[in-house]
Length: 193
Image (cartoon, rainbow, N blue to C red; front, side, top):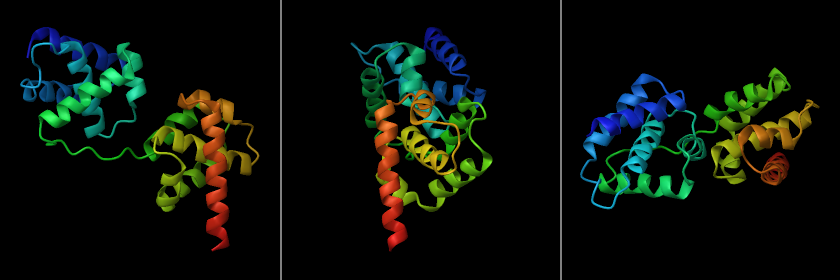
């Protein structure tokens, strides 16, 4: 691994405010997967994908969108190099599906105290106890957490609307609204059973 590559990883990891152990993992992945770096491979994109893989392995609440925005590149390019690393390593790295609970505090803090503790508690409880129902809402963990938070905020009359939640999650308002309605329908069906 070149010094430029390590500096690149450190610079963008600092931009994402990642802990040192994640940075070290990204550097280690970059060294281990140097055979994936071939002629015609954009080395910077490879470094960004190593950062994202380290984030996923350590279950840090950052999404592909966050990394692509910080590194100023298209999400599809980052995703392509991320997949190249996974395939090139023969799927050596076990990456779990991201849990929406890790994003809940991030959304609540971005809302700036407009959500009551009761709403946060009910959202946390729904995400952990009704995991199967919540998975039907949306595959994107940040969107799922935002929609379910919005559902309980509406239920508890908190001064939060779906547009504010969408702004905090980086998802379109119509997606939050649709997913909130979907969750409401699923909860009604579950209560009828």
